[in-house]
Image (tube, rainbow, N blue to C red; front, top):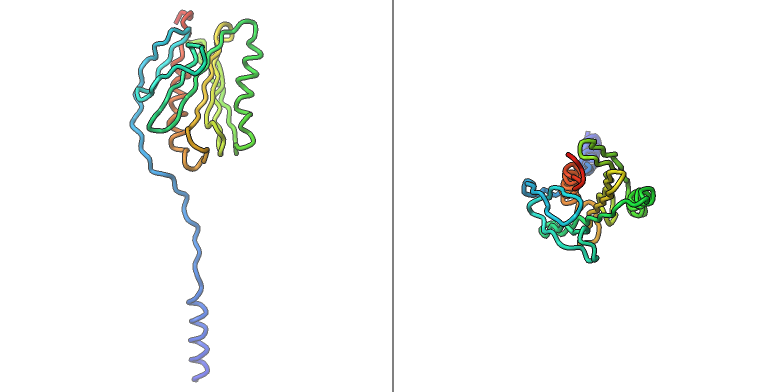
Length: 190
C-alpha cells in the first residue's frame, strides 16, 4: 500500500511540474490619431488636391515649385509630391513611377499595387502599399496620359521598423488615397 501511495505522489509530482505554453496573441500599438479633415491645397501648379488640415506644406528642396513636402510633425512622416509635365515622355515617366516601389524589394515583405481610375477627373494611376521594413510604406503615381504626371511617396524620419510605424503608415496611406481621389488638373473641364 505504501508503494502505491509513493508511486501516486511521484506521478502527481511529474504531472504537476509540466509547464503549459501558450502563444501570445498578436498585439498592435493602440495609437489614436485625430480624425482627418481636409482642405484644398493652393499652389501655383497645374494640379490641385485636398490635404489633411494637420499637414504643414513645405517647398521641396528642389527649385521646382510644384514639388512639395507634406509634413506630419506629430507622426514624424512626410509625403513627398513630385510633378512632371508630359512631353512625349509618358512611357519613361510610367516606367519611373513603376520602378520606384521596386527599389524597396530588398527590405519589403510584400508590395501590392492597386490600379486607380477616375474618368471624371481624368486621373489614372497606381497606388502601391509596401509591407515590411522598407524605407517607404506607400507610393503612387497619377497621370491624365496627355499633359500631367504626379507622384507621391511616404517616408518617416526614423529607421524603418514596420511593426512600430504601421499605425502611422496606415494613417498616411489613407491620406495618399484621399489625395489621389481629389486630384484635379488645372486644364481639365470638370
